[in-house]
Length: 274
Length: 188
Image (cartoon, rainbow over all chains, first blue to last red):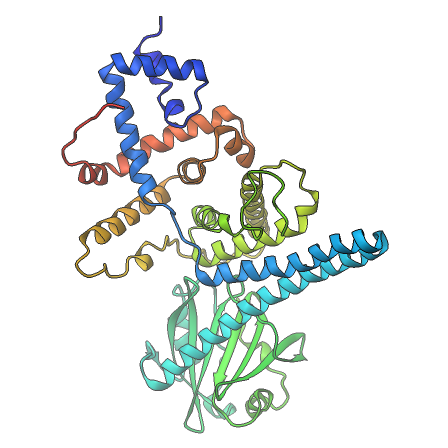
């Protein structure tokens, strides 16, 4: 005959509904007679109830839900087409539909990529607005690239260094920096000023920030993406594991605003990951 | 997406009903919202690409969780071989989600605190314990299904679950006492 020790091993199986029918009935019969085992089952059930009250453990953000639905929708339509075409026109048409399916998945991927890129642009614009209206102040105020570089050391999850250059080398002036949050991780916000206009540069790890879309101009092995949104010129690019978004209200198109400072477009790579 | 191969397939053809579960699993693995979002997104992309190879009667839910875990393991391998960045901050979103309690709603407040405590306790466990707790207590997968997702024997699932629960009981002892102040131990 089984004793309490034998039955005790069955408690998790009983609670997880993993006992076979015969074992389950034997265990229930034992519980009726054994107060100690009943108490132990109750303790386990209390823990289980506590865990269950925290369901779902995490809720997916709405933006992710929307992206997945868009992805599913992108793939669903060609898939349905695939079946219809095979039924009506045979396999050659089905193969054509299969190509459409692959295209649909690629298109859906592109939609997701663009959504993430837009999210980075929106965040950079929001940070810039706050910077301009003063609700986001710079934690360090300095025109020295060395001071700003030192400020970011250990504060952002990547190594970030501003190029050393004298103030009269460029028409813009470095004004300072702040650490901001982007998608749950720290990102670098660098402030500049030119013609009394504020310019901000958001720098995040390419693990969380991507670039896509806009007017695309390759230069020096880097693809620059230009956008004109809500009176802001936004330029994004990725290099060496970092993603950049430069936001300003300088006149002209995004590309022109870049040329204001960088006529030769040659020094784009001077913000480097060490 | 046409995942209605069997009774276990999602009622919603988009498979969206598993989203919270997959996101929770991703949070358990990554402890980072941004990485969890990317992981879930990539899981759905892979699932859509592979759905044609899915056999009739397949367990869609376990399949999705297996894909997510494989994507994560591949990601970890790449990280190990790739350039090293300073590790991201571990954050479980507890603080973010504890926004102010609804006015005059003590229950909601207690519930949020309790949820935050449960999350924090689970996130303190080692990864292999966090996984079994999530898959059993939240996703209600059977031992066999969990073994399939984790690619390990059923016996390993049982022993991990036992140790994980024991640790949770210790970590949540204060919460358990607060939730059951009388300490009455009822019968089943």
